[in-house]
Length: 334
Ligand code: NAP
Image 1 (cartoon, rainbow, N blue to C red):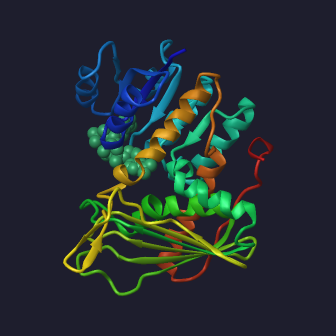
Image 2 (cartoon, rainbow, N blue to C red; image 1 turned 90 degrees about the horizontal axis):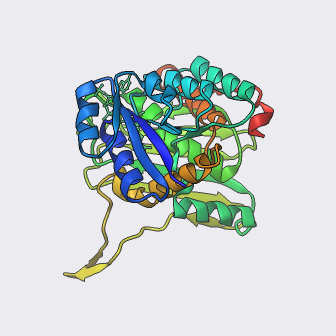
């Protein structure tokens, strides 16, 4: 069986997702595309055959031929498309963030709860990364005892000119926040953000940032975001438990020894580092969508991530520890 997919937003990641659906993921075909810039949608469609172009994302979602939806447009537009997909009863994979405001995230949760079953998967692809999955299994096995601290490092070689200090939380640390919840099976309670000595390449952007999150269990999450490190895309992670630790291993296809030193490869960007995670994320989405359901990170996970990053944005300004105030979790996400 083949799942007919419509893709909204054909920018950088939208095009990646189309390529992945057409070449890597079994049982999926892209049948429709939409973009606020219709000419870009036409260009994307021209590279494929039999793909319809819709001027409005809502019309793509409602189209008879579309069975599942990918939302890869600009963050502030996500909520309206996710709500439309829920209204039409179609599984939707929404790139992070689920929505950019707490109110929009809550509206999505309410709509999905009213629909009565999950239709939303949020694009936190790290949950499908084999290394993070192995870390979670190690923690769950009890091998390191109760987790006490999670240290996460998120380093980008560089970021685009429009990047801001707030994006360090809403676009970058949001992944670390979600994976912390996944690994520790815990919810954030408070957040504070330190901006130490600035990288001279960072211009006006406070970089690096050190974000400290107290979890409900008392465990501490410490996230370093450094987005001008120049040397590559480097994702670090270690959970310190009561009797042991588990960390992401440096991985390289080969190790080169020369001139009295040894070297491995640092990924260039998130596409290279997380390619296996994106593949697994899409395989899971398509397999579930074929049965009219979704798998993986939920609208609740998207909601918590947005509420936490917005509290972090506030903490960056106030330089104080800010509470992360979460609504009651609906039964649908138990
Ligand atoms: P991008 O290159 O700017 O692409 C966004 C696309 O959506 C652009 O083509 C944009 O058109 C279009 N768009 C804007 N408003 C729209 C609307 N109302 N309806 C339909 N299309 C609209 O950005 P990107 O890097 O691909 O990011 C897209 C989303 O993916 C963001 O939410 C981002 O946070 C997320 N993302 C996730 C990851 C990850 O690791 N999971 C990595 C990268 C990006 P214009 O350019 O004409 O505005």
